[in-house]
Length: 389
Image 1 (cartoon, rainbow, N blue to C red):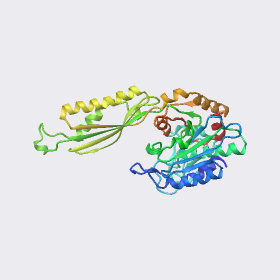
Image 2 (spheres, one colour):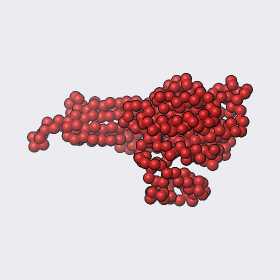
Image 3 (cartoon, rainbow, N blue to C red):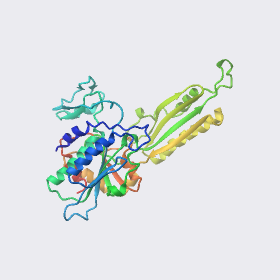
Image 4 (tube, helix red, strand yellow):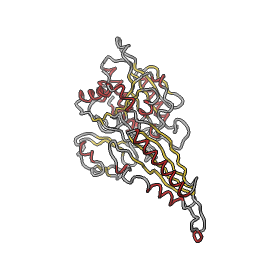
């Protein structure tokens, strides 16, 4: 079966994760895809197949004769999708011999070259989208399709290999995909997460990340007698945001440049809340950004009175590059794999996070090879195989 044929099956399962849920998985629907994949793994004669009660699915392709002592290598993808635009059935649309121009989908939405300039690089290719009324869910069902297609390719072509460990996880889209990952059950010390963007991208540097919430307590009195007494929480919130570097936002930064991102704001005179995410690849610059937030809290409490501003910072994930530095041979293998397949490797920083970075911090070297979201005409099984031969 071709990778795209698997993808067309998997995307019909709606698997949005739910950031407001306190359960694992965050949405029961993820189990539906997990059980389907469990059956497919059994059909591919994988061993040690386990679907646990938190919706983590594991399996192994045993080593071929003579390769039992070759170190195991792992491949990981996630089953959940974002929750946006995922409230009814998903209808995949196949566009063959794409002309490289703006594409109008059946639901009336146009993917314009102006907004998505990479479209013109896909001229002559077959592309898969949704009908425009929902997401497609290629992130990360394309990764799942690639991994299982690789497994099938190895078996059909009797290609010798060491043990291959596979894991499909829930809740990656809400940052919880690695929380209950069973490293012992998985069985590999090194792995590639197949979850990305442009073909040929190899990514192993991600942001250091945290959440930062400001809670502002105001003092509300009648405006007619508010002289030197009123503290307008919403205005203090504006002071906080104005104290941040104006250009260090997602819109104003790229590549390795970090940012402060105001995700939401709410409030009135009595109270206000600002919610930020803070990102930087460099750990020292990341700490400096957090110290800037702390300084704002300190200065505004000195100005308006203690307890007016309360800052809560919660670390989310770290840059895995420091851990990957000890096993760069696997990155070089991924580059070689692309070259053998006739694809120029693109080593780019991740302007975000991944299961891989969280797993890397769990005494587990999970490398991120970002290839999942663009199913190419090049057999992905060959690309993956070359990564570890």
